[in-house]
Image 1 (cartoon, rainbow, N blue to C red):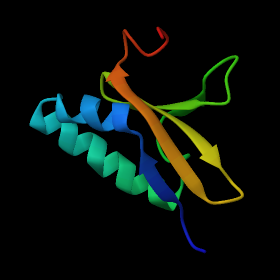
Image 2 (image 1 turned 180 degrees about the vertical axis):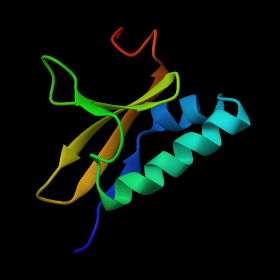
Image 3 (image 1 turned 30 degrees about the horizontal axis):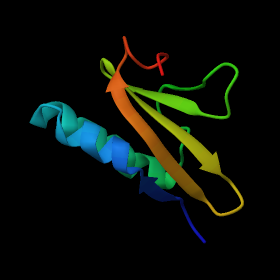
Length: 86
């Protein structure tokens, strides 16, 4: 199987819908890039968790990677001020 399958959790879909169109478009473009590789762009592991975060402007995409299934699960899409608050 080439590339990755991106699965967007319900919470992330809701967060994405609430964003301004220009930001939403940038994030959707970034999600397309992630299908090629989850490590394209400014991606860092979140300390103390299995999750990663990808920076898209002032927003962060929080996700986990399943390398066995080549799946990326998008958990949250939030402003940078809120990414580390649960």
